[in-house]
Image (cartoon, helix red, strand yellow):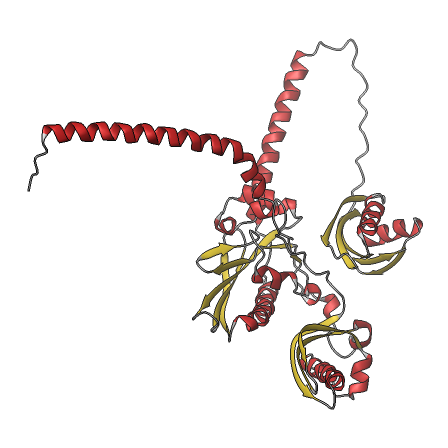
Amino acid sequence: MTTAIPHKNLRRRIAEAGLRAKAALVVGGFASLALAGFGTARLIAQVEGDRGIPPVANSVDIQVNGIEVDVTGKTGEEARIEGWKQAQKKAWEQLKGPAMPIEAIDAMVSSIVIEREQIGPRRYVARLGVIFDRAKAGQYVGAGEGGAVRSAPMLVLPILYSGGARQVFEVRNVWQKAWAEFQASGSPVDYVRPTGSGGESLILTAGQAGRSSRLWWRNILDQFNAADVVVPVARLERQWPGGPVQGTFTARFGPDNKVLESFTLTARDDEALPQMLSQAVVRIDGIYRDALLRGELVPDPTLLSGRIAFDRALGELRSRLMERDVRAAPPPAAPAPMITPDAPPVVDVQSVTVQFASPDAAAVDAALSAVRGAPGVQNAATTSLAIGGTSVMRVSVAGGGAALAAALRSRGWQVSASGNVLKISR
């Protein structure tokens, strides 16, 4: 059906439309001024805020987490002591250690980690972690790990799908925390775990995993001294508020986001979610371990193709400029004798891991300055920073760990070496 509009109504509508257009232009002008005034503040806000979780320092000790105990006693303190003893025994059984009395097991324990505890008048309920001294317990469990194959440095990009949004380091989340608290010293995979603070949250995003540009990946990996990337993905689905949480976990690898394996876990509620995520991290680490043994967890050779092409183009440009300079130069009066310089000696540059005590920021600066000032050191950067504990740095040095250890000893440092791993102290 066609509706006829009276001529007077048509003119009135055109006039009203003109007034609305003018009002929209005025509002748009004020909006533009507001954006110009607050644009800088909004850009700064993208990198500010409470974000970033520093990863724990890798320890050489043997750690077992997530041990549940529920003990009763005459008093709450007695129940707590008995609960710790049960946790030590359960941890020893998980490590498949030989049968021995609790007193002998207790002598090998260096510390107890309290993940969660509730103390009543006569009852103790907790989830604990037990750390064994490797020097004492290593002869019974974990033998032979020192000679295991180690992977190249792998950048960790933990992606979390929750509530319809993808997150990496934009805000602090439970998946990032689980990877930051993972004790990776016993794993043959060399994880490079970013803190996620500052500008790291702008370049390490969930969308980065879908980019296949080798040049883009190479720029990011160079910033973290990594050779390739692993992408552990967690997708959390809540059945109802306060109810079970189902997690689907996928281990991905490389710039092409290759899927290695996927599995599913379920937590009874949000309180049990951290424990489920810790178990998922351990299982994903096992997937990456198996891939390393199969020869799949190796750096993608195409990541270096962009650099090779750039070096080739730079060499061709240098050759052309040299030829042009030679043609433009006047002929020499007399030929100068040609002196062939001796070829520079080939020096083997190796990557060395250095552990050092870091009670405060000044101790970190002192250790970095001493290592960087040692002869033959080409690069030194912290990979794990723990104020009040033991921090770790990765050093590229000519001559390997022996040369670095000798240089540090000559400067008054005490050095203990185990292969390419040094532990220094004053």
